[in-house]
Each structure stands twice: as structure tokens, then as C-alpha cells.
Image (tube, rainbow, N blue to C red):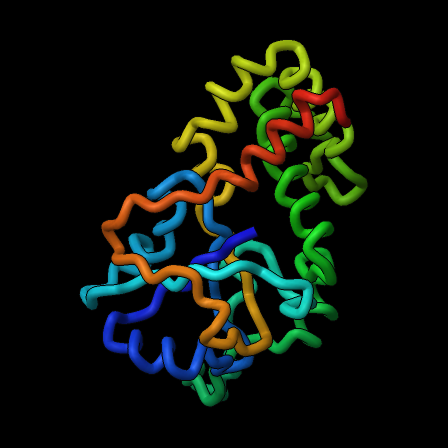
Length: 220
């Protein structure tokens, strides 16, 4: 599984020489997909005026544990009585493990499985919006039922599922638009495979092809 880390262009020489260093306790990346808009979603969302480059590298087991989740787990802030910010920093891994353990992954196979299930859940959600009220009056979803609906839809017509979901950039952007991978260990320079410009139409198909093959071979 490859990931991409966006950084201002002026950092290129430093990164190629020293690697991607960990600052503020983590480095943010995105899983590299076949979809250009999704690959650069964070770049567009942040609306930076600087010229950016993308650093592409392969995830190793040594990079774990890491976080894969929504951007909302991003920053810790502490305020004084007048609501002025007196401390601002990134959450540490131990804090994330305490408050949002489901977003922490200890190995590559677990991360890929979560990525796969997230796609299937969203596919199932297009045909089965199973919501119910819990005892506190909060709407919950029947995740097992929604996943089953997604699998049923895929298996009933794999070709249509590829066209409508797996190969559909709009759908995949909807699924993963604000997800990020948070790394907590340095990436050595020798691991950098490619440096791309922000307008480069560069894609990585292996992950999606593995997922599609998984279902075409009749796996659950």
C-alpha cells in the first residue's frame, strides 16, 4: 500500500536528503488511490497558495502503529479563562489510543481490511440506510446489516459494482474525502519512490485491484 505526503516545494531537497521527519508528534499522509481528486483532496481543502509536491512511498510494517481516520482527531488545544489558546499541539499516539482506539492500526493487513470494509459499508448504505434509535434517543446504524447489503450488491453484479463504485472517482471521493494516515516514525530518504507535482495525474491501482479481485473470487 502506497501513501502520499504533500509538502511545500521548498522542502524537496531537505526531504530527499533527510527523509520525512516527524514533527508535532506525527506526519499526515493519504492512501494513494487511482483517483487524482482524492489523492490531492487535502491539498484542495486547505486552499494553500504555495506550490506543493507529493512524496510517494510504500508503507512498511515498521511504520505501525499508525492512525487511519477522519481529520477531526487532528489537534489538541488548551484555553485560558478568556478562551485564548495557551497550548496547541497534535494529539499523541497514546491520547488517540485512549480516546479513539478504533482508528489505530498495528499492522498492514488490519489497515487494508478496514479500508475494504469502509468501502463496502458505504456501498451497502446506498441501498440500506438501517437507522434505529438507541436508549438515549440517538440514531445508530446496523453496521452488520449494511455490510451484508453491500456484499450482496457487489456479488449480484460485480461488473456494475466496479463501474458504479470501485472505479467511480466521485463515489470514492465521497467515501474517503477527509481521511488521513497519521505516521509517528521517520520515513528514511531511501524509501521515497517518487516525487510528483500537485497537478500530476499519478495513480496507484494495486490496492483497488486487490479488493476487486477479492470479491470476484467469491470471498466475503
